[in-house]
Length: 170
Image (cartoon, rainbow, N blue to C red; front, side, top):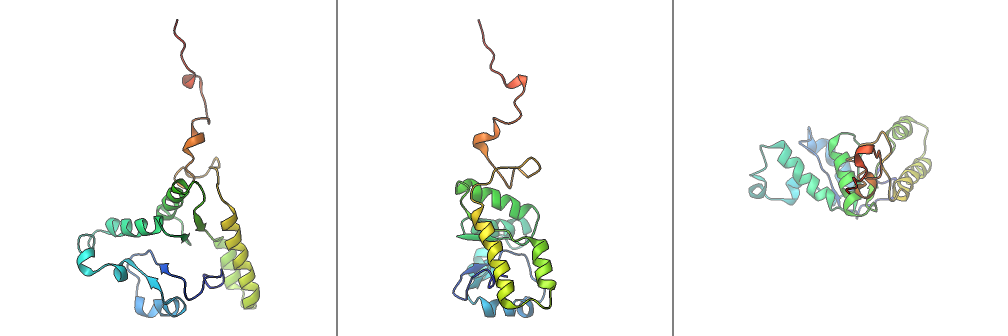
């Protein structure tokens, strides 16, 4: 997916994850394509990680910190981690953080098609990336999470009630 979106073997990648089952075997193809791949375990020494090791939420906080300040954030999962992170990055960068959130349904259809060629797959993936890049500032839609779409400047204008009207004294 990353190669199809235009990322090459000179791209530095930080993989935010917990323990990966049989990581040496399962990660070998990704490491071959992206030799600059890093994790918290490759960036920090055992001594530096010691205070975090037995606490999954602390380990996730390390991943969160790195991803918050990354140049580009790519997510392929749902859950709280990417939603909070996307919202935090939108807030920090005024809505202009590079966040790539591919359409998982479209990805599944593309990857499930045995007849799709590389050129066609790459064209679809580049379109997904362009769509993510073009979003810019997104406003919270009624059913979206406030964590994913924080917009503090305009929240006070929504759902005004009689209780929010100023009280005039005589």
